[in-house]
Length: 107
Length: 122
Image: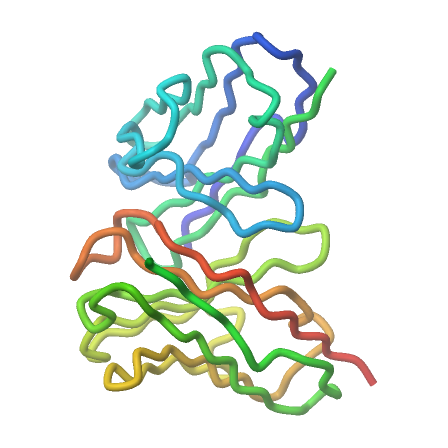
């Protein structure tokens, strides 16, 4: 099975900051990497699929990059509504494993 | 409006069985792969199983293989997860979700239900 490792596990930042979250796969997953945002008590929401394609309706301050084993999610200028938990997921091989999540908190 | 609504969760004793349901509406259900995911309290997301639109292709995580079975009824726009031999470690919020692209299973999960809670305890 493919293991997905995110870093950091938690992150404190301020409104307006640029933030980057990293996701690493235990083997190449080409560009089959998805990012989700989850707020407390809510279901996850798809932000980015295929490593860098923004899901419809997602603000352009979110971007994704990477291929193979190393991927990043970048938020260019944090907004108050962005404080949440972010998870990556590989959809290259079953099981479509998730990373452990990165909790983004207000500094 | 595209919507998924899970049901069937509850409190169950270890060793017991439950069947979760997911009612879909607002889209052509039979065209899409569907997936079950769970989230234990305070933990991350765990992918469990998916099924193709025609039920001819399924995959299940090793952690639940042999105990959990995914199925669907396209005539009733419903997805199911039969869970047997439940353990305390199966306690979680269980979500159903839709694969983003019709006919595909590799493009992200774009529609999620609100989840149904399963608690396994004596």
